[in-house]
Image (tube, rainbow, N blue to C red; front, side, top):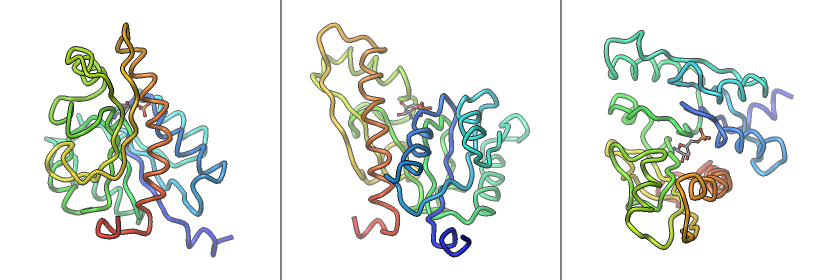
Length: 206
Ligand code: GRF
């Protein structure tokens, strides 16, 4: 029914990897945890990202935007702005997207971009802190807990206003694999909760 679709909140999801966070959004829309919401497009910076297959299986429009086709990250982001703008979305979700966004993109979609990070920001975040590197740093630090954070994206990496966090214990003998698995389970819940919280609100309502 076009009227129902017309009222749907529209998402663009940017990915680079396995896409389990994307899958969490897809599943939440299917099981009603995310109401009146649709993913308009999935954009990947990596051709072999399994996230693209997840989008395809779910019948969601998806595209690989090849960084090698662009002179630099600024030209890349100019194209990324065009693609996202064409979908007229309400919220942009970085779900395992590994490229650092330039101000061209961030300033165009101010307060409409959220990111999920696999640690308790502001700790263990910032340039170069992603994926397994984060968990290695947490284990090396002897921290007794870790977790995940969803935050608004600003020009500074991992430094935007925090929307939500979930905590997990670091257990004696944890490896990067065991810790990242425990956190990833919480990421999937936190991301859906955060999208619900942000949709229809501005940063000032939160
Ligand atoms: C997650 O750990 C997320 O926190 C980080 O990259 C990983 C992506 O996982 N940004 P997936 O591609 O969503 O499975």
